[in-house]
Amino acid sequence: MIINFFIPELNNHDVQELWFQQDGAKCHTARATIGLLKDTLGDRLISRFGPVNWPPRSCDLTPLDFFLWVYLKSLVYADKPQTLDHLEDNIRRVIADIRPQMLEKVIENWTSRLDYI
Image 1 (cartoon, rainbow, N blue to C red):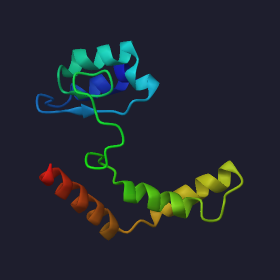
Image 2: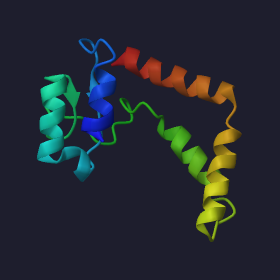
Image 3: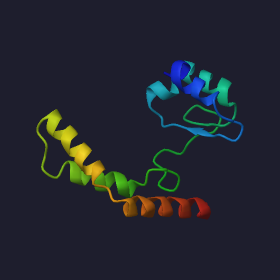
Image 4: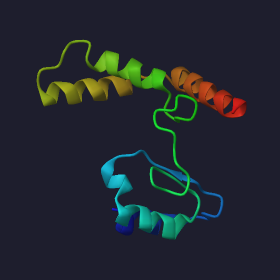
């Protein structure tokens, strides 16, 4: 995935100012993965075992606001889906129903935290 899609896409852009962040999933932190990303991004990799260690579950630095995840999860599981199809339908419906104003508030909240730190 990294070799076939991510790195070629990066080559289409000016990456000198780009910082790449990923979580601590094992597939993201495998030696081969970290090596490829370091070769491509140098010190601009924020990852477990990368040049810059990302603080796990940092509510100040997580782009997707925890409020939004909790809110979406509460709606997706409100009727206790019993099948994968039901779960998928709920996910699609809940995401489609997100109002732009809510996303604007989430972004506003996140950027205000970035300003603070």
